[in-house]
Length: 455
Image 1 (cartoon, rainbow, N blue to C red):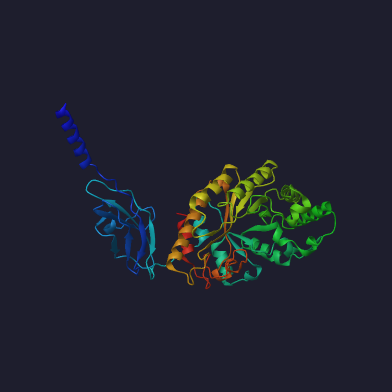
Image 2: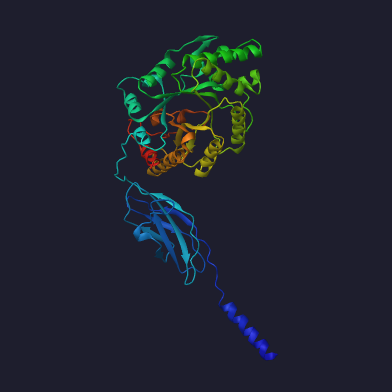
C-alpha cells in the first residue's frame, strides 16, 4: 500500500509539472508613427507567449496578406511595418505563440498610410458599367432644376453617368400647390422634360410629406373629410399631369417616426390611421384612369436598417399596402455614415423587402465621414473608409434578385452642395464630404468604390 501511495503522488506531481498554460488571445492596439511607407504595429503582452505572429493585409478579410508579413514571427510587442504604398488602407492582426500553442487571432486594426497612392480614380461612367450587368438597374441622382442647363458640368455628368433623376425638393407638394386646385408646374415640368428628352428615367419625389405641406393646406379650415378631399385632388391631379412621363412616385414619405409609431402629422390627425393606404389608392386610381397602368408606387423612409422598432412598423405598413395591391416598392433612404449601418444590418433590411416581393429603391444614398466633427479636412483614412462603404452598398444592391431591383440614387452631386452640413436635425455644422464628386466636379474614391461594387 505504501509503494502504491508513493507511485500515485509521483504521478500527480509529474502531471502538475507538465500542465500547459492556455495562451490568451492578444489585443492589437492602434498603430504609431504612421507615414507614407509604413507604420508601427502594436499589441498587448500575453502571458506564457514566446513570440507573436503578425499578419498585414490590404483587405479586412486577410485574403491578400503581404508576402513579408504573412505570420511574421516577432519577439517584441511591436513591429515596424515597411515597404508600403502611400495613401493606402492596410489591416493588421496578431497571434501569440509558445513552443506548443498558437492563440486565436486578435482584433483587426485598420491603418491608412499618409500621402497619396498616386493611383488615379476609375473614370468609367457609372451607367455604362451598370448597363453591362446581367441584371442592370437605374443609377439615379438627386437634382435641382437650376442645374439642368445644356452644357453645364451638371448636364454633362448627368447625361454621361446617370439613368434616373429625382427632384431634391422641387416636385414636393409645397412647391407645386399654391392653392386648392391651383398649381405652379413650371419648375417640375422642366425637370420632367429634361429627363424625358434625354432618355433619363424620372422618379417623382414625393406626393405626401409632412415637411412639405403648403401653407394654405396647413391653414385649411374645412372638415376633416374636406381636408382628405383636397389631398385626394392634389394626388390625382399631379399623377394625371405626369402620366406616362414620371415612371415612379414616392407616394408617402416618412410616415413612421423613430419610436416605431405612426408619425403624428397633419395627415394622420386629419385623415386618420388609414391615410397612407388612401393616398396610395388615390395615386393608383389616378394612374389607371390616365392610362398609366405601369406607374410604380413606392413608400419611402429612413433609418430602418438600424432602428428595429421603425423597421417593424414600416414593413407592417407595407404588408397592409401590399394586401390592398396599391404598392410596388420601398425606398430605403440610406443616409449612412462610414461606420453605420453595418453590412449585416443593411442586408437584413433589404432581404425583408425581397421576401415580400417588393421592388427596392436605395433612394437617397450619401455616406457621411465627419458625423462627429472630429476632422477638419478630408483625410485619407476617411476617404478610403467611404470608398469601402460605397462599394459595400453597391455590392449588396447588385446582389439582389433582378425582380427586386429598381434604382440606386445618390442624394446630390457635389460635396459642397450636400444637405448634410446644413441640417439642423443632424446637429452637424462641420464639414463633410458625403458624395461621389468634389466641389470641382472631380470624381472621388467613393465613385471608384461604386464601380468596384459592380464587379
